[in-house]
Amino acid sequence: MWAVMKKEFKSYFFSPVGYVFIGLFLIMFSIFFYLDVFTYQSTKFEYIFYSGATILTFIIPILTMRTIAEERKTGTEQLLLTSPVSITKMVLGKFLAAVAIVVITELCTFMYFGILCFFGTPHITTALVTLLGFLLLAISYISFGILASSITENQIIAGVITIGFFILTWFLPNINEIFTNFSLINMFSKFPSGQIDIADTVTFITFSIACILLTIIVMQRRKSVR
Image (tube, rainbow, N blue to C red):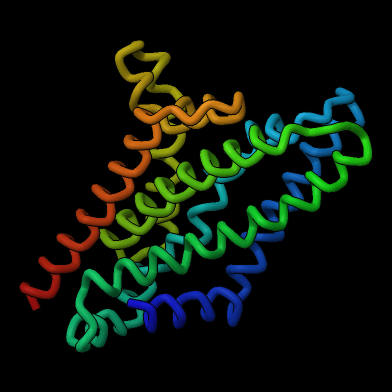
């Protein structure tokens, strides 16, 4: 698993994917940071992540759409399916590599926290809780993105499916209040208030595990067919 993770992690930086993901996020985050601090005179570090969560919807597919779809398109999937590494370890390795990129990106946001310290006294505990919620949201998005990548050999289709699903979860509460608990973005919105909601945390983790398990099942079925 760690060998797969290391290989995938390196591949993000041997290609433009990792740089594009981190660059796009920090550019958009910087814009929201400027608007919050200089336009609205806010020193609440956590507020910026409300907008940051929206950014994830459109850039997480940059990390995930190629994870398995590219292997299938280039024909290297067969090598993976017949390699000594189990499918479970392969999927987890790809998943953890993408999560590592997000963690690096989150660490970069601490420079904004440092800047805010010159303008006010941002609450460090609330900021850390927000970062935890943001990571849980990103992990959920990554797990679904890899699942979408496993069901098609076209990266663009995988990306569209991923973005479409994320946007759908935005509007679920508008259809019926019963769907509020199924909206990932709504669950994240509680974290910037400094509250760690156990139910939402469990939902994020459960959703991620379910998507990973479904991805493993899809890959196992492809291996058995071959």
